[in-house]
Image (cartoon, rainbow, N blue to C red; front, top):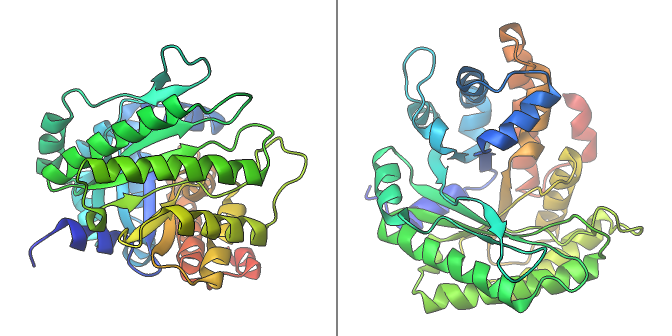
Length: 339
């Protein structure tokens, strides 16, 4: 079958499956490894990711795609098999993070714009040859006094659209990730307001740049209260507000929405996704693209020791299974105890 942007995008949101975000930068994975007292060497990073990609039941049944970091897409497993081939052999799609990170925005204190457009066309061609069939670019929108500004939202929307157009030119499906951060004291209603403004700007710019929406996946935040907000929105409220916000802003042509966990606890990220799918009544597949919410448990179980690989794989399978059920609206909190 000929691969098209549309067919790849549909496969990325196959029923009951979601995306493993294994694209932590060297700095981020070092922090995660520091927490489990493991040195962040290239070999340890490879061994850890290899154990995830070799968790056959999780990869085949619950993971549709894996977002990789530049180092990882080039690495080989201990037996010499490219890590990309482990992912493909498990029936999953390799992807790649291509942005160069959120940098301070000149003239706008406290705000950032994501960089990485320079040379992106050439990098995408190389990543395609290395096996990537989708990419990811993250824009970061913070909520605080006086921010976000329209300038910050528009600058990030423009960069996302230019990135998405370049991806599609390279036959790579873009994951468009505008993340409204959950840091801060803001209410869920304020998160709704900022997310709505952000998504309106993003889809306006995607249209301006002739981006094919049927070959694009959206990776947004959920509508949640800020971490320091004294009143936290409950599971049903998060689900209802998120659906309402997206119905206002996200075109039906988008095949799927894969949520980021954004600092939520493992179980909260699963419960919120499940509640949305249990409510239903929207035109897109609603699934997950989790990093920490899929990996915190296996990282802790592994702790850098070869003898702990089976326990780490069991923990990864459990989290992948729980989120796979949530993507179908069939998760129940009682299932968590089965691990």
